[in-house]
Image (cartoon, rainbow, N blue to C red; front, side, top):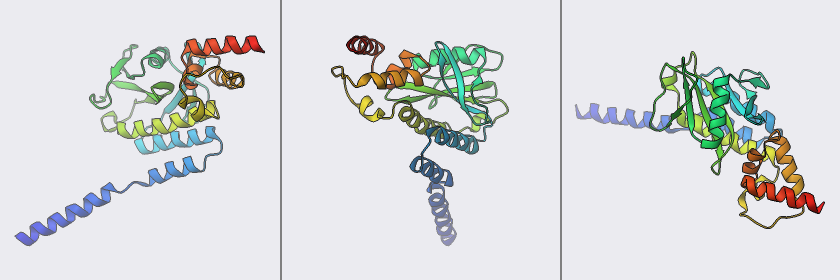
Length: 233
């Protein structure tokens, strides 16, 4: 009897060690980030990996297209510049301000707040919106179509991990020297900032509030810089 118990414990330890080993998907993430050349391609690769690891068929990244309007610039289905429903558009407008996770239920057009580490997804949930955050700024939103999926089995920690990786890629895509711009506190206006500001605004489809967040500025600071630098030109 004691020998059986010891063998049982040894089997348990072996299984625990195997389950603790990182999966092949983690190596895939590392390869994508290390070999990245075109950010668009890297983001699409990560998105496909999200779909593969979660078993979801339709995962997209929503980016501002115009004031109060968003487009699916990246999508696991291969669709580019997709159009979201009114309910999703409404939720996205709210999310860029609140930074909270949101869920849309079947038969409802009103998004509800979702706490990833406290709430559970159910069969009535049709869409989950995950903010892609960097230093408390929403750069984009991951839109997850839950219809036909086993929502209760969705690993939200895994989703959050991929969201963070994609957020970093998006940040450096919008502004090449993002680390320098974002890390600095408020400083005096520099003459060479104007091109970076215009580049950020263009990448954010004219959304100056979004561009300000990407640059680590408040909207007021961005307006001041634009006004001052434009006057000096």
